[in-house]
Image (cartoon, rainbow, N blue to C red; front, side):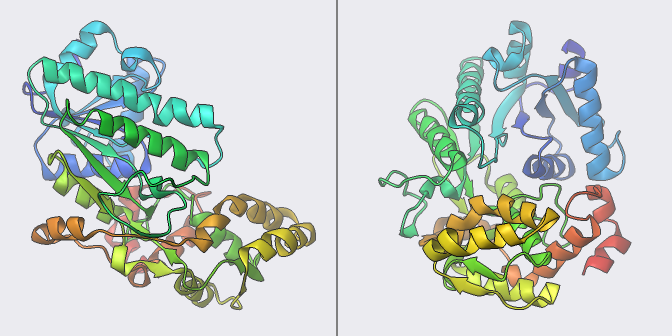
Length: 391
């Protein structure tokens, strides 16, 4: 630990949590490729050697070379769910002296965890990281604490949900939304003492140029079921907004805007958000499937879905059952406003593309990787020949 922390050049490093996850890996790539800063990552592992091996595997996946940028990224065996981040007191001191910015990207994104487990990761993990941030600030200064929240702290909000909106009596549709709301609330309560900043992505999908993802969740589950012919009808309104953003837009925006405390940014499609009707049209065209009927959500859940599940067999039945938890999002009434973020990103040349521009790449990658069953490394997906095939 002492040796690896010596790789940094004093204060000025970045502590990035979640670097082994989908969005975190994209952020790690940007810090390594577009800056000269040392990045410190917390990695759950049984030993320092195992933590280093996990990080090398991430670098190999990202760049096709486990040694790429290895001197500027440090794996620290730690755990957000443990007191003191699972670090020794001496290690915490050295880390606090080495970093000036914290980017908190780690979270459970499961919709199905029991609330207690979701809170242990998303709320208590954030609490422990805030404690570390306060410690780092006391030891010489902290420039920013960037918290990756979610636009879905809005819960069942109806109407426009702005970047300054937060608490409005909304209810939550799953433990993910509730625990992320509670973790953002915790961050907000530290805003008077710490230089906090909040990012709220909506539904994050694969890379807009290659379709690459290693996280086939959320919108991918119902799309996979649809591709297999599971849906003759779906619950929802054709005009229901479906706010989807590609991971490269989210990572570019966080990298470009991090370090501006006191702001909340919606990393959403906003005015460019698709509708359920548009997503269905794109899917029917790509998979050459008949257009499903859109039914009242209440009618579908009570009558149609149970019938479809009973009649389906094997993989179709499992696909239908896995997609049930996403039904509330087909009947959403909220629009995530993002005027502040658009204005901040404009000088950086970053804007969110409409899903119609890259949907075919998402699905082509899903086909090639068999929806994650045949993993494709990010470096391979970004290979020129592979990217051209996906275009």
